[in-house]
Image 1 (tube, one colour):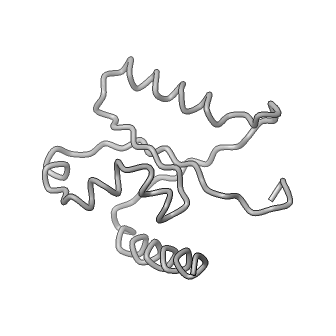
Image 2 (cartoon, one colour):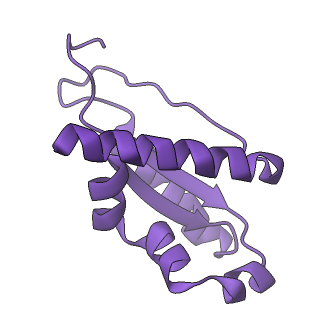
Length: 111
């Protein structure tokens, strides 16, 4: 809390290698969770963006540069930090449970 208040949201860019079999098995809600930024922000207070690692190298570089430039500094030109988190499928169920708990907390805050 550098600004003396909690943040309004969290900014997340996920670089992911999504195998074709998984991509084809996604249900409509799964796709919504991965691509509907407005829905994600409303439900989880997260600005979330997905970058697939399967894009061509030039596009991957452009997107990486773009996201770095978007969030590397505050409007005051003060540096901001980044956190890299490796995702492990072995923790998917626990993560899903924690997200459900957090979503319920956010809904309770709004009521």
